Amino acid sequence: MRFILFFLALCALLPVDVSAARIKDIARIQGSRQNQLIGYGVVVGLAGTGDSNPNVTLQTMANFLNRFGLTVAISDIKANNVAIVMVTADLPPSIRQGARIDVNVASIADAKNLQGGILMQTPLIAADGQVYAVSQGALVLGGFGGGTGGAGGASVQKNHPTVAQISGGALVEREVPSDVITQANTLDISLEEPDFTTASRMADSLNRRFTTIAMAVDAGTVRVHVPPDCVEPSKQVNFISELENVETEPDTTTKVVVNERTGTIVANARIRVSSVAVAHGNLTITIVSSQQVSQPLPFSTTGTTTTIGATTTGVKEEKSRLVVLQDLPTVDKVAAALNALGATPRDMITIFQALKQAGALQAELVIH
Image (cartoon, rainbow, N blue to C red):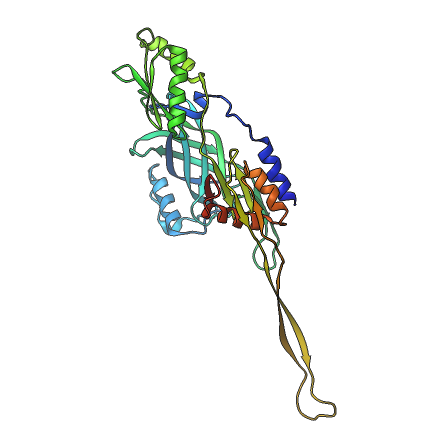
């Protein structure tokens, strides 16, 4: 019942008309994008919670010390206070050399806790193999762990102590060229969710604002011809800023998203349902295990008292009736009708799948 009420309340909040959104909220300018960075590093200073001497960790430490002119045999290195990690970061567009970005650090061996650790200087490379940033600094964990552990020991843990962050932990060493406006004095706007209707509406909104400068190329791209008086570098920023703040009405594909693991159903629009008849019944199978005591007969000189397992199985099928759902306008009305059947969240998922297979659900059904 609580699930049905939540679903009805959610559908009631869905607007009848799609509201306007800024272009910058539903699209991005091509040539202005983030780039992913990754690096292989070493965390030191752990209080005995580091890697348990795997060969990779020892070899990494030997190579690291070699950079400082120290030749150390792998057998002489203890790695309890050291952990090898992967460092990841996102390089924002148009960021300049010397700026700082945040990094994420995660253990890749068997370290138990990164608390108190310091990441040593780690180059961060992009997909082209070039170093774009260098990371170093003290780790900040979103959790903690402690205790003796092991057999008979007590321990406590919150969140994931093998994952950490360093705010502003990487310095940008190389800039990524950003070519937003082409030599033909055009720029392309890429929709985050490609849709022909949204692209057409976006082009119309831009043309009303700037007088015929935009054209929808396909479902995911709108091409804008930059006016001659805005081509100069000193005026490009103001033009793009004004362009991004133009409002348009995005169109969405009607969807019903189902998560079978959590029993969640979410509809993103007023989804229409054709006339359909629904019958639903639950088959409940109950299996109960118990222990029975078997004793020898009275005055018997043979036999011993033993325990025998017994299993009782019962099958129950709930009664249900065929309910005819007349040409209902929206999914929330369907949810109300299914409530009359006493449908549970799991039942609702099964019914929506059947509605889609019967061709009555006029929306895309997405199942996770």
